[in-house]
Length: 447
Image (cartoon, rainbow, N blue to C red; front, side):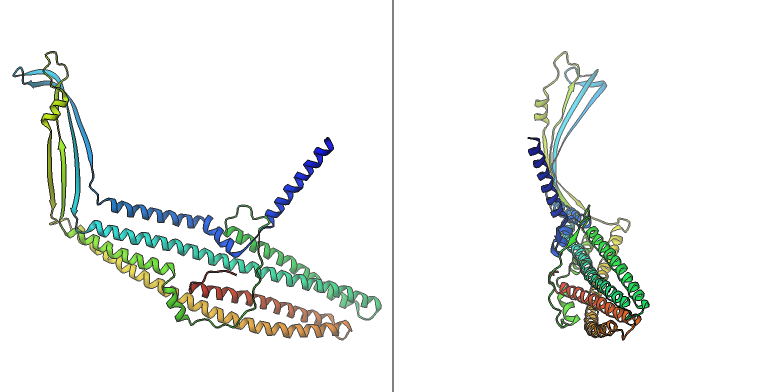
């Protein structure tokens, strides 16, 4: 029985370890990273709260068109002389009074302030929603750039490991040649030195990869980044750089980029803000209705002079329908100042929209130039890799038969490794730049 229990417990531990290992080994795709950030990022959540706040303001501005309804009840206790009708004299008595009432008022005209407030708040809400989209786009671009950096670091690490393994084989081969007396001991020492450098390079690339993974995990706000890793997608062969011209991309981006839409909505909101300020020049007109009643009773009533409160309210009840008209004549130039400030805000909103358009145009132009430069760099790096690879193979053959010393061999290998690194850098830089250009054309970011 004990043995059976131990076996069961051991099986449970193995199962739990397997589940834990599977969780740690989960590899995140780019789309999963972006979706996770959009759902959990604090900045995006704050933008969502701001949108909800603007929606509340809009709803309240609509509700402000409704009439209000208020009930009131006034009461008082009085001590001293009071007139008693039944005795036709002032008598020292304590009295109390109750006066209920109900009122309702509605604004009929306020210089179109209410309708303009509603329209302003509508555009403020639209701007807030576009700001939220802008934040999501910024985070998606940051994640994409960091994702590319990890892929680049992974390939650099693979190259470093391959070069280190090659050096280890060359150390063994050179040692045999030294033992056979075919080459000098100095060659072996040079090769060993090169192998040590490349082993150190492997460690450095591993550290770079670990740091890149940590940076992405922190962008995603992952609490425990230990074991965090990403998928390595199959990237198709790079095609020739034939994008739309920057002006064409800019024209498309103007209609879809949230920062442009947000600025346009803010500009329209400022226009209604100016109309609201001008509403201060107009008279305001409102209507009110109400009903009141009152009662008066002696606190101490041994002679039964008091009439019931209900009867008094019934007999004293009165209703009214009234209106109020307010015509502004002089308010210490407050309205003039408000209109002037609203015009300033409107001009500032126009400048902000122009600035956003300028920044968008410059960003697209820069992305276009960067993409073209990275593609040209990729082509040059590809030629360099082919050239250095052929040169290294030729040098390696000559070194193996003792026709080239270890110094020339190490120089040739270093040049080949550097060319491979430059090619990888140009490759991922080109992919990132083309993804950014696609982003400005409204194409979702994916690998």
